[in-house]
Length: 176
Image 1 (tube, rainbow, N blue to C red):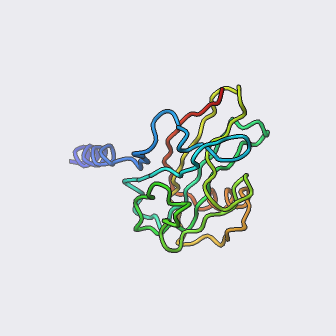
Image 2: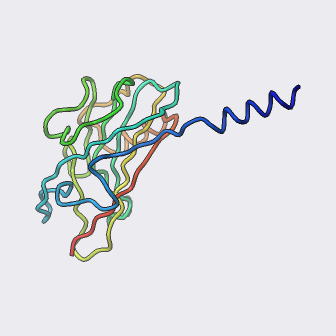
């Protein structure tokens, strides 16, 4: 009887669905729509639609990050940081950053562009295609004590200190 119970427990654990991030706007490649407008780039700088499913039950809020680990800085480049996304939120709409379409209470913090808003892809011309890692973090607190002026290192530290689980997707972008 003990073996049957362990088998049933193993099956139920194995059937749990994974925390997943998806987007109707993103594919394997970013486009001019998600390219920054500045620093020599001429894109539309539109933040993509993102939606997630199967967050851990103990989640109390979410954070969203977009990071380019290939930026020639020695430390990568933060393109978007949003914290204090309410737990009931399951998606962010297209162009939410520019149109102030983020959920009530959500806070955009400083990116490496020096603004508290989405900053699209802008790799150096001729560089290999860069990876853009979009990540939603399930957090164990309802609110992080951060403001729009908080810098990316502090935001990253606070997110990582309270992360229960995360889900990511990667898109690439290069300029010739």
